[in-house]
Image (cartoon, rainbow, N blue to C red; front, side, top):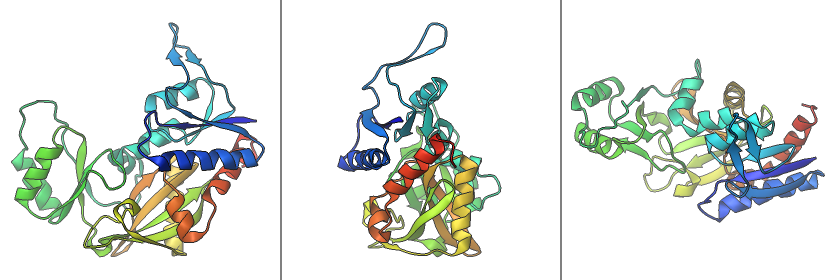
Length: 292
């Protein structure tokens, strides 16, 4: 069996390389000849008859990129991806994630109308409707982004207008603030449909975002069954082999905040002592062999 781990063409930091190497090493330890490649390091083209012309061969790819085009080309060329292209695409776009989770407890969300006019200004009438429905403070989120980037907590109308002016030309949306979980969430890693590790993240210094990259404290936990079950069901609904599910602690139970198809696992490994790379590699091998 042969596999590849595909990274983004321009990784933003050493941790991207470490995650890719850990997965490749775990797969090699399971008898799978695996190498790490960046997007663009092998030819990939659509032929004149629509056929896929791919300069790489493998039984599967661990797809750590978010490039929806290459992912779909690899699948059309017959390669099994972990995670599948459609699942990666649904998780990369935070609002599309919410749209894909019909029936799940998520914060109430309102999409911002897309704007293509260079001299456009925020629509204060529309923003007033948003504020009336969601109340202040409310969260403004860029549809695309990681590590807490593009996420703002807005406390009043003037701040909302100014934030919308900044976000106007990129997809974004507005979300009800879950005050009960301010600065705190639970990250659960799900592999092969099973919750395998969980940690609580607590922000420091008044920060409302609980991302580890922003300095949050992380500790391993055994979450209530409702939390684990919700994470597993969300992963299944999105068709994910592997993911990190972020849950808020709402007044009436867990609230699904985000699902990350390419979640970094160094932090949760350190917090829980769980070898995530080994568990993921074993799942991949079983799935390729048809044993799952």
